[in-house]
Amino acid sequence: MKYRLILINTALVTLALALMSVLGILVTRSERYETAEARVIDVVEIYAANYRADGFATVDDGVRITVIDADGNVISDSNRSDVSGLENHLGREEIVAALNGTPAICIRKSDTFGVDMLYYAEKVDIGESYVFIRAAVTVESINSYVRKTVPAALLILAATVTLSLIATLIFSGNVLKPLKKVEAALSGIEQGVYEKILPAERDDEINQILVRIGEIGERLEKSIQSSEDGKEKLNYILNNISDGLIVLDEQLKVTTANRRLESIFGVKRCEGKDFRVLTGDRNFLSAAEDCAAHKRNSIFQMEINGEWYLCTVSYTENRLIIIVLTDITASKNNEKMRLEFFANASHELKTPLTAIKGFDEMILLSDDRDKIRLYAEKIGKETSRMVALIDDMLNLSRLENLTSVNGALTDTDIAETCKEAAESLRVLSENKGIAVTVSGSGTVRAEREHIYELVKNLMENSIRYNNEGGSVDVSVRSEDGRTILTVSDNGIGIDREHQSRIFERFYRVDKSRSRATGGTGLGLAIVKHICELYNAEISLTSELGAGTCVKVVFFS
Image (cartoon, rainbow, N blue to C red):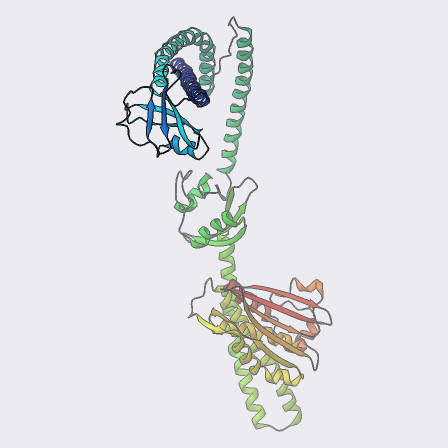
């Protein structure tokens, strides 16, 4: 460090002195040019004022005087007795300037003497004609003076640099000696061993600096120790929790990952690496990228090596992305078992109910007694309702077991599907005098059966829970890459306290009225699961006694 300081100081001094020398030379050269210009102008003015046609009164030493007639021919020249061989001067810059009434200084190489010269000329009227008086001095004399000053400037520069180098060598040792103590103390802190810096210099200011640095060093040592203790505690906690945890920076590089997460993904020592080394799961990758780009949090389920995890992605105020994986495998298995039992029980129930309905139809065809017919009609009605219920249970069970769409996806025209559903519900709507209208257009990429089931359930609900002579309006529109389906009615409406639970299976606002309408209580639950299957958003607005509006938004 000592020698670097010496070199830097010497270089700075040398540069400063060199700049000063160059500046001095340039100033001197400029002054010499200004003096020479003033000299030739004065000489020309004096000669112009005292011009005689028979020659020159005097000749200024070092200044060449030339007289040129109106045609540009040289009449006389102070440096040549014979001017007959000189060329015409009418086109020279200084002569043209004088002829135009704007005398000016011109510098160029002399054709006569072959050196650079400084020229100035003025026009002098004599009778009905005129002549030009021109003065010139050599530029070489100016440059010669400047060159004479350069060796002296270089000598001064060399002497100053030498003295600066000597002074730097003397004083740098005294300045750097205490800094070496500081360096040794800081190196000790880095290795976990701190030695207090004792002020032992002659300079009180340096001693004060050493004391201050010593105090900072002590606080730094305590801070480092406290930080290391806190880090150890945090690592212990993170490595002993049951959830997998990972922290990413804005560039999606891993800054922290606990042991549980490493065991989940089967990786080791992933800190500092891109988060894509963990997994290729598209949902996981897109959720983290979306959180980094748009600061959006998300929660979703993902399967890793046969195990199920609830993945929570969160963006923090300090620009970090925290991902927590909670094991939900046991919950998933219980749910699967429940759904399987639900499906099996439904199949078992459907068989005898179908047989009962068949016998009922045989009774209706073979017996005319009024009471038996009445009972048979009731049996048929209840049987039909139970069959519809079981069909909805089977449909819901099938939808809940789907984790992705496996069927053939087509561009399904929602408006046409709504019209088809309205036709299938015509008998129900006409019995209640409900007017059903379908308007607009729009398509969605989906299994057509799922879309038909969705719109039919929404429309059937609007018809069943409507007033006599009411209306159901179905509209479809596309905007900003989305397809929006809206089903609204002017029916009985839903009280605000029930609206948050209306999509739960078997949830009924008014059980007696729901049974009277013939509904199964599963229609909106089926609609909800179809929306989840296609990542569609569903919302419901309703006012008691005024009607209900359900909106489904499909994203392309």
